[in-house]
Length: 499
Ligand code: NA7
Image 1 (cartoon, rainbow, N blue to C red):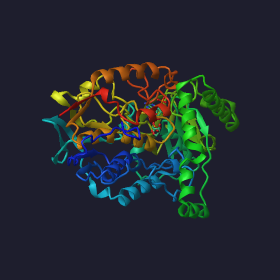
Image 2: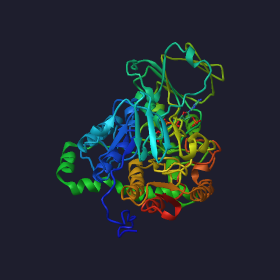
Image 3: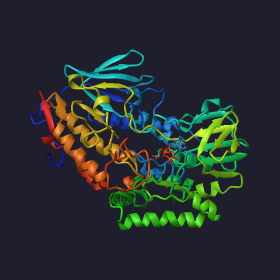
């Protein structure tokens, strides 16, 4: 270990090898990888991006009302605080602009090959062989999968959906050519997405029907606007801007939140429960509607929804909360199990994402021909969420079992980069050619993780995208502090280093 607690990679102090790195994806984590590679003096790398722009999920999602529920100043790279945020919780377009700005400023944009989608990635003779949909091929010593979590839309299997005569689309594929004002709009789903869309369209729609399968707890939040004076102060005072990154004591809040979800009877958890219950009581006047909106599971079991205005939006005179089960979609609209038809012009599927795909459907083949699909047949796994046995020199940012919750994934990816970069440096420094995590380290981590995950609030009796196919949360089940500690330096006893 070095003085900083990091691995001391190049024991010999020799010149570093010119390694080739490939990064998959130019979203938040791909841009981060680019900045950090350049900072480390690694110039021999390419970021392959399937679309024509950077931004990942913030490029794909453009729905009305799109907002990040993490305070804007805390949803930034630690090395690039941003004085321009217009409000406490930034909207999607602003976040997209931020990522475009960072990619340009750090000249990461020059390292990106756009419109190149990875289809095959195979480890042969000590190198990763990659192939894009276009037929383009590349080779790399190291692969970083920065492919995101929520980018494969999940379409509901509702009978008759293709017979609908109006327009329907998934929330992540918003069709901006479709008029909304005065229209009859149906929204299926009440995760963060559905709730934000309803809040944005209530009052604009002629009639808005929100189809709710399961109620959600709503955490109240205010979204104040930053004045021009405030933004000028952020621009001229770097210390103030830096303090804003830890706005409202953000990191302490994250620690409290992770303590709450991992200790379901903690005072922190009970406090969250009390806040959401009070929010429901105080905000919804009609007792019948209030009961329809009241979940029967615990707060934060599903990802907590932060909203300043959903309850107001659903009580708008032209809004309706529909809790009857959807029977089918017909050419005119949605029919519920009670036989009632809601005629619609537009139907929005805010039905979430397939969160277990990661870099798939790309075929990833590790050492000795092992396929990632086979390794992940039961559920996606990764040692400390970053690497997998039999996939040497292959790392993931925001991979399976990483921390998820109501906090910034940028912060998570930065800590993961700190860990991964030390393993990359072993190869670059000539310590070895290949770094691979041991099967027994993976198994021990996963066993303890699953045991602990079953005790978190995520497993306390609800369905959510946090759960794997067996109903076990595929998340980091410990505190944030423990995650930061784990990401400080790899334990080399858990790895095989091959020449
Ligand atoms: P989520 O949180 O996965 O929500 C999906 C919603 O869609 C949820 O309310 C589901 O109801 C509903 N859903 C899914 N399929 C159906 C069918 N067949 N019928 C009715 N309702 C259905 O996705 P979001 O896009 O809102 O948010 C994802 C994350 O993005 C969010 O957590 C933030 O991190 C950002 P259910 O609750 O399963 O009954």
